[in-house]
Image (cartoon, helix red, strand yellow):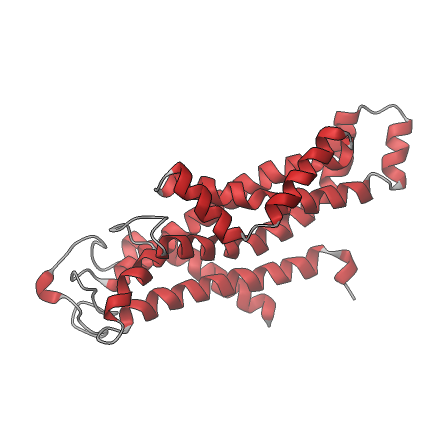
Length: 266
């Protein structure tokens, strides 16, 4: 049940985000002050409008595109950088690897969202910088997990046998060790994906992320604070979209973990 629910919701979110330009009834940036704060079900506005008369359905759909783009971009960067650093740190085990792991330990002592928000405040606002700040705050998880896996895998008989036959360290690393670490990277990536989406929404909500009028769920929730008593839908629909997206990815990640981790198989 969990498997199919996660897959179904994830597919629905992805299809909705990809098809947003065709599914959205109006331009998400088009304003119409005469039609401001229309409730859900109003003619031509299925989910109502915001304080500037912008169609809420269009903004939620385009917000999905932005959220998935940020999530995918951040996951790819952190998995590549953190995975490579963890791979080398676990296989080499020299003083640079020890220094790297101590840096990772220090970074893990800071709350993830606070660290990402601080980095984003330093490098500046905007879509590119929010991806960079989330990546800078999130690589350590991959590095720690991959290093632990490498320390275990390189002690196995087939790796020791390949090394005894004279295989080069680089070939040994990428041919025998890396394929056995990839499942762990996939599981971490699937579980981190929702964390990056929620973190981006939180940072945008606080004003340090994607800036209005770009339709981002976090900034939409921030703009709705002054209208909660008169227009509940301004917060309800972006919040529901964020919750459903995070839930779908978490369910999918749990299924991937159960599938790819042999220790969890019955």
